[in-house]
Length: 412
Image 1 (cartoon, rainbow, N blue to C red):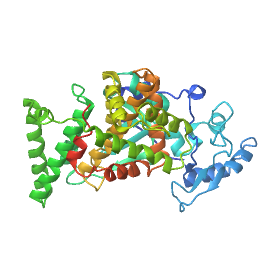
Image 2 (image 1 turned 60 degrees about the horizontal axis):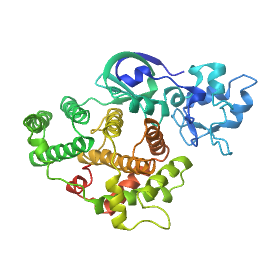
Image 3 (image 1 turned 180 degrees about the vertical axis):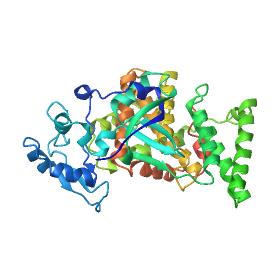
């Protein structure tokens, strides 16, 4: 059985208020997804003597592709009917295994979801994924949802993402803290936070390329010089002045977002509701169906489709949460700017579809409307991990190959 840790962790306010709503949830965690089962739990489930559960487990539990000791040694299959959910779920949407034997017997991912925990140089952080409808609801409904505090939280040891400590850890933590503070600066529009993040990432990459630091000390020195320069620019207002002349390029915007939206038709999603929402948004914008509006009409409709400050701020909280979870922008070998562009991609897609849905529904979205789109978007990105990379490819094929191109799409 996986060791349970109880640690003081940095947590957002919404997580202290979260609890599974069970049958009241509009979805199920395992819809359309074969749940991976680690080797230890696979063996424990296979040998469970319970008479009632044994035939269900025999039907649902299968050997996976993982090697001995792996986290994907086995999996729980989904039903073949329209519900496409784990075979251990009851008709009421509750896990029979959990109800009969308690949380301790569940596979790690079932016990952990939707929480994500990481440890950086011994400091623990726990956030949750908005692919869970209740997490998305708490995050979107509460302007203070991302307020951080320290709380004692349990977590299975195997489910902690350990970020390796290196000689560059202190400098990288300064980079991460800078980007997180910028993404959380709610005095700015979300597009401004992302645009500035792009510029800072480029500055850091250019400075590293020019200096080619050959020691951790040099790396830290170059990093701090760039961050100090941007801190000064933010303080004196010159950073925002650099964005003053940027305007959205509507033809490029429509071309890129339409191309990314078409990716859904090239993949075999099992989320008809997600497809319906995107279709509704595109139709309202004149970009869907046999009678799609011409460019002029699509530009006119897009000009009418504006998000309110509340909807924009909610997207900002969702993106900030993503950044906290994914150790943004440092958990990649593709560079800072690449990670920032990935976050911009999510924002542009969600803003575009939110705007289209708002237009379709009379000019404004409710919290519930936005929650539905957000949770389905992130659920899809988890179950189909090539989805966002393919959307990024579509953006690049539409002409977004340099940082300044992204700055032509971000403004409101």
